[in-house]
Amino acid sequence: MPPASPQPRRLTRRRFLQGAAATAAAGYAASTGLGGLIQGARDEEWPAIIIGSGYGGGVSALRLAQRGVRTLMLEMGRYWNPATQPFRPMTNPGKSSVWRRNWNIMPIGVNLPVPFSAGVLGREDFPGMKVYVGRGVGGGSLVNGGMAVVPRRDHLQQILPGAVDLDDLYGRWFPLARAELGVHDIDPSFFATTPWYQFARLGIDQARKAGFGTAMVPNVYDFDYMRQEAAGSVPASALAGEVILGNNHGKKSIDKTYLARALATGRLTIRTRHQVKRISQGRDGTYVLQVDLLDGIGDPIGSARFRTKRLFINAGSLGTTRLLLRARETGTLPDLPAAIGETWGNNGNIMTARAWVGRTGPKQSTIPVAGIDNWADRDHPFFAEIAPLPAGVDLMTGLYLAIVNNPARARIAWNAAKDDIAIQWRDSYDDFPVRTAEYMVNRLNDANGGTFNRLLFPSGTGHDFTYHPLGGCLLGQATDDAGRVQGYPGLYVMDGALINGNVGVNPFLTITALAERNMARVIAEDFR
Image 1: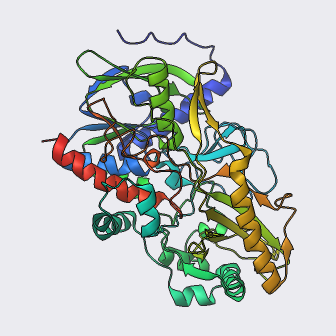
Image 2 (image 1 turned 90 degrees about the vertical axis):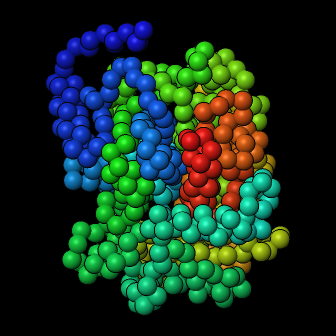
Image 3 (image 1 turned 60 degrees about the vertical axis):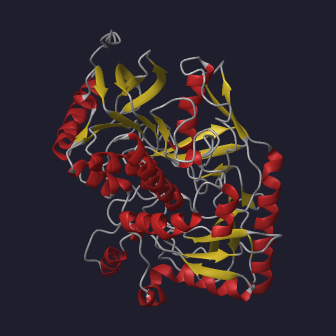
């Protein structure tokens, strides 16, 4: 039987206004093919269901829809429409900015108060590690900087199972992912002359003086639109401080690429504010999903049940691992592999900053396009994004988000008392990234002047958080070499949970390419 309906709550002015807003939003969503709460039936069966709407979910949705499979996608966040609920800049967060907090949660800057709401940027806090996640249709693509970097082949050879044909991955799937995501390079003449990238040009110059290699980095941002922003002919987005709290206009997030194409087939339905809590399996092999229905501030206001023979869990590294561990440890899917929860990493993320580096400029685009490439250095391997610090004044500060080749991996364990996961991250795992970041900053300062910016990072570095969680359901261990979960036919993982902890660069292009490769196998072999 379907779950019982929740008891009615007293109607207050606040709840009335929330309901009116939700009804208006759902009306818009229905016109675009995106389903909200009021469209969600209580008990349904679908040929295929996808949990999560980020990169792995987007690839899965498009390829299933093109194969003719009627598919339901469940997303715990909302559909973000800039016309009705625009994103806010980093310097002025608001209701759309943060998932269920009373303050903004960026790793640097002042903790400004925000309205408690189901905003776009979430953070999960564990001892020694904070993990940033995207909330909404598009997942992490809504809150990242859009840097689409192909990793070094020799590094992928170390972290992917031998069954993955790297010639095939680099020759076919990376180019396909780049094309589908809309990846392209900034015009060199615009980069060389615009005041919006003075900070990046200075960062490149100082890196070269320190003897480091540098690289220009492709992006999914529309640089033609950015030119118009600079000319003042269109609403500003990247040039108005928008990035980690969402981007209103220029960035090609997953909702504008893969999911838009999947919806256009008429075979994909997206239900927003649907949080999958538990997965079980019937005697006939059907997977049963127990789902909480969420209101505008992320509180549960009801429940639903969905069933399918084909379940794609693409809720991100933490979300996917959480659902699988809960199912294994509570006995609803008791034979899930022991490897689930192993080999989790933060992609070697560490931030640092230098003060008094010279004129970085009061105007700074939030979209990074340049980096320091020292990955080939065996003693200090890193790739560092030359990051913006768009405060509206010249802070004479160089900011860097580094990805260090950190070999440390953690285990995600199940905490039965809390009915939740726990990342077993040790303080010693940060030692090598901290030493590497300090090496980078000291070399830059020795060659160019400057000091550690202790205002942004009192210890010199920020190493207790990650934007790039990876692992927990490793390809070739917890799954076969195409993302099929071992022991459970019809259960798939296609997201960053498959990847062993550290890809050496911003990971979403790798996640997308790997999902394309895996889905091609699954469609050909499992959907005949």
